[in-house]
Image (cartoon, rainbow, N blue to C red; front, side):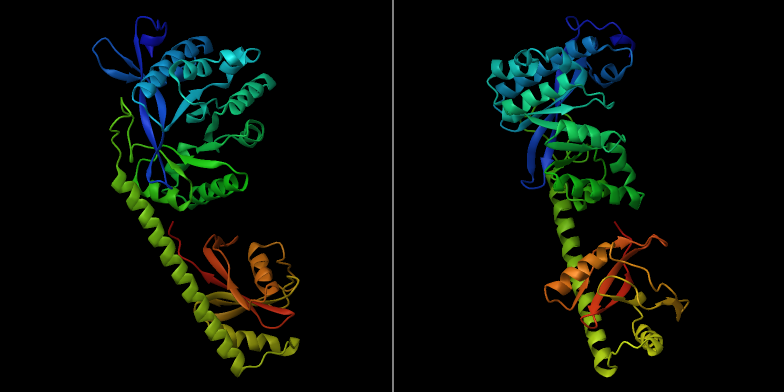
Amino acid sequence: MDVFSKIDANEIKIIAYFQPILSADSHDIYSYEVLGRFVDSDGAVKSLGPFFSDANTTDDDALKVDKLVRRYAMKKYAEEKRTEHLFINIRLAWLEKFADKPEELPTVQLIQEFGIAPDRIVIEITEEEFNTSDPCLDVLEYYRNAGFRIALDDYGKNASNIDRLAKIHPDIIKINIDYIHKSEDSYYYREYLKFLTNFAESVGIEVLYEGVETKQQLDICMSSKGRFYQGFLVARPQDSMQRAIVDYPIFSASIEHIYEAQHKKVVHIDALKKSLDSKITHFLSENSFFYEKENINAYLEKLCSELPEVVRIYLCSKRGEQITHNFEWDSGKVICRDYRGKSWVWRRFFHEALKTFIVGGKSCLSKAYRDFTTKKRIFTYFYAFSDDVFFFADIAGSDTP
């Protein structure tokens, strides 16, 4: 960015744009992210992104320009009498300068100047490389104690992120854009988004998906159950927070679509479980179950032949040890594979079965997961044949997102 190689912030008009961030719980704008812009000699508004990301831009120069962006944004926020939150991007390297004088932090001084409550401001840490010093952490703690919220940008991109997370203790994580875009074509990324959201929820952190550009991406993110959404699909950066242009219909339609999909999924799973319950109950009524090693193979082969919807069936002890062969469908016929002695107590589906049994239930259908060998999406059905013998059946699931 040649025009900014020797930037003079006093000669170039620095402004801010604001990109709305929507919340799934309110179906409305939760916050605006402040984005740096400048007006060139022809009056065109251009992004400051290349300037901030240029390796030749020093931290001092970046901080000098960013202060102008922040001042512009907060002045406008106050003038427009906004009440939403405001995301302010800050590099960790900038914080070290204020380790001994946090009360002089530019953002702290600006909210005092413009009468903005600190709990309206989200400090977004944007530095990718994790090199957090104790002084930086002390400054972040000062922000937190003063009432600011902390967000961590680009989460999931680097292996060091768990270290950053453990030390920074953010309130919000923004999921890496690349993962969201790649989720359209790969179930690995779709499952990773769900994993990140589940992990964040388990440690009390809210999730923001940024860079959402297509309806499919929005639906995938919605199905991953994050709270906040940002991207060109729902709202582009704009010069004012008043009368913000937001595609509310597409946002609400995605929420409704996910609700309908979840409802359909629950109904389908319930129907599948009831169907299997009925078939197993009927089979047991006509074929009394007694566990005898010399007769069990014929018994299970007959049962499998009456369950065309299953992939495989087998029996386990109550402690998770497989006590029979697998009986599987292969090219239209039932075949036998020896997995006796394997322990499944470490598998999630066994935990779900055991929980059901302990509270007095007779059967359950596990959450969907991927088979280690085939990578196909499957459910595992459980039925307590007796107090000591558990029946399991794997059923193929839909491979759609």
